Length: 323
Image (cartoon, rainbow, N blue to C red; front, side, top):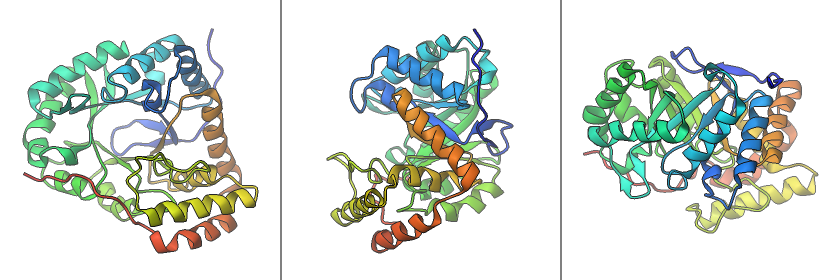
């Protein structure tokens, strides 16, 4: 039976010709990364996402030690819709056993991913967290290997992901024009950190599409607060806690406001957020609908930004290696 779909804003992704839903489905939670998720819940959440107009699904072999890819594959198959109605992104180079960006490993990796996803091709294959590898290897070995996969039809477009923004310029300045189609940045377009904005004109000039993940800053911008392992400073955690408390007091939800803040920049093709239940899917889709109808809650945002002013754009270290 065909699924009736509601409209969600679709945005162009660089020069790829793809149009991604402004809200993207982050499938890492389907790998039990944040607690157990049943197969039934995984399938139901993907089905509801698709019904509500979400057409972009992102995973990685690293999430849950390949479980996320397997669960997403089952859920997408259960949709029983034509393959061209959804866009799938997976990654290579980061695995449970560690990092390996060699041509041999990433070439083998895509075949493994396609088998788990039960697909003939993925729309985007991304080098996963490149700051933990050699950026020169990414430029000289990994991207050329991915270009061969593109020619073979196993992947349509090539991406790179990472936390430090400087890894993107390092690679994009050294590969041939058009060799990289998309970047995925995380934790740099949220109420507490909007440094990705400075990079957008550069990325646009390169014809590179932009996906922004973790609009809630890995749990900082939630009522419950971040997990214990979160690498943010005590000052940043404390400020975000205060912002969440202010929102709660005013009858507002900091997570929804954060999601809408991230969605409001149209130069970002899709805002990826992890989801593992129908309820989470509905909340994120509703945030996008409300934003489209009424715009941002400027009054609340002004107050939140004032609370976070002392820690604005404060990030945390990541492992950069450039040789």
